[in-house]
Length: 259
Image (cartoon, rainbow, N blue to C red; front, side, top):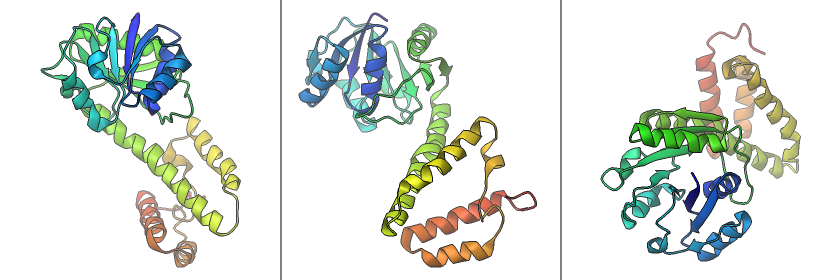
């Protein structure tokens, strides 16, 4: 992969561009907002930017579509096939979006949480790839290994399950921290007090399965504490606390070894 075009300038595109720029030429960056394309291009020393899909260079080896899921199909249909490798980076969208529009295509999904404002190192990120033929898969694997030590071939169905698991592991967990922050802020308490607890909880996963490291009143079936907490909450927080506590108890019908 000598020349790569990145279509997008947002969360995923930003970290991919920085990582790819260390191994190949990022030939062009597209964004609907030209200023965003230029900002990312300047950061990775990319020679060309555009906000017009019709102005994409046609001689790149690979074209990475890193835009919102609902915009991927529009990009594919707006640009004719040029025989290069085309791929998208979505965890939930099928490879079939390319069918009938490209001859060589695939999916390169980094299972990570990204933010445009912070470049995320990709060396330890798990990439899941899929391609429409063996030659394209070889190219996808090679491209993935430029970015990370962890590259696995999966199909679209497996990737959808991985995406659901990542929503539970990351998005839902982060929302729980948001709710905890709201509770503490309302009492004049700092969320920073939670950070050692959160870090220890995550660090345990290097040694234990999640179910083995579960602690708290629900795994102990301590209904008195649970009811006390519920009496202090209202709205969504109360319902989430009740539902999650019940789920933990359902997964731990015996509290003999609870902590």
